[in-house]
Image 1 (cartoon, rainbow, N blue to C red):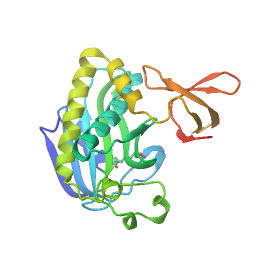
Image 2: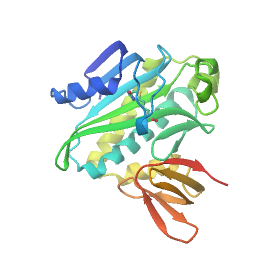
Image 3: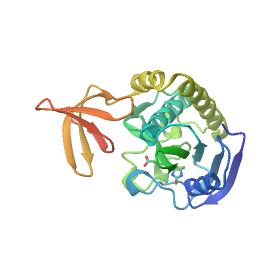
Image 4: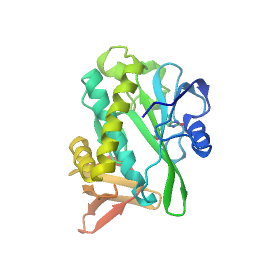
Amino acid sequence: LGRNIFYEETVDSTQKIAQKLAYEGAEEGTIVLAEEQIGGRGRMDRSWHSPKYKGIWMSVLLRPNIPIMQAPQLTLLTAVAVVQGIEEVTGIQAQIKWPNDVLINGKKVTGILTELQADSDRIHSLIIGIGINVNQHIEDYPEELQNTATSLFIEKKEDWNRAVIIQAILLKMEKLYTIYLENGFYPIKLLWESYALTIGTRITASTLTGKIVGKALGITDDGVLLVEDEQGTTHRIYSADISVTS
Ligand code: BTN
């Protein structure tokens, strides 16, 4: 990964650029990096705060030969790579909140957004957007984010070299991706579960169709979250916001 890097100072969204490159036939492993995003995108149509020089705003193009159903596996794989890369460089042990938020002490340090292009059921490109809060100080965040977001600086009171972190994460990601292509999702799933925050606890999953309260049992091989409600019924959650409920 990263043999082909597109670097820009200011962009609308690295996702958009990567999509265009993918469409034009860019090779697997192509990376788009920017110092600042004016229109950074998050999951569920939210925006992603991407201030200049403060974080890592990056999109990775993959072209795995897998059915669409399995795309979430690669988002989970990416979260594992981010946790491992952050730990290697900073010594901080981050955790994953399903599906793909990376948290430190309960606050969000990284968000991952996967978008894909497919022909019928086969993926022809997968764009994995990774946003990592690196050197922001708490006052750099808009007020509404100050209680829920963190950065590597805030956690360790140290400025970090973003290039070193990018390199560590891409190396981890490449290793995991090779394992994935050779051995399937199972070994990745075990790693993901070892970093997961929400498995085994009582959670509320807010989906587009309503809320489900229950115990998070784990994820399926497709990366779907299983939640058992009070009546003992197991729900398969494909997309939701998760909060821990006591
Ligand atoms: C989330 O909502 O948690 C996902 C946030 C993903 C942000 C990254 S930053 C790089 C890439 N470009 C974007 O516009 N979004 C993703």
